[in-house]
Length: 96
Image (cartoon, rainbow, N blue to C red; front, side):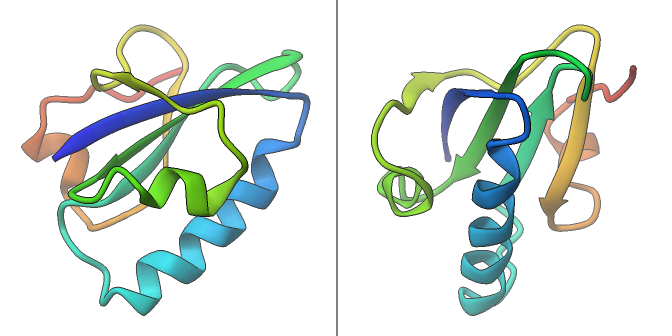
């Protein structure tokens, strides 16, 4: 499984979340895929984190700008879409 991240201004990340939801469903909801967000809604900079077995999925969600990374950590991590139990299995703590 690979991790990719990308920063978004304001609420621009919502379009990526919608695309991810369609892709996740079309692929049969694999337990190795998830989309997480870090940053409070009021913040200008929102960062999305994509976990997937196929790193090319990132570019199908938005044009470029995705960087290889590790799983999100620290304050403000929110689980958006993925298989139930994903965060627990991968040791990701959620919180505001």
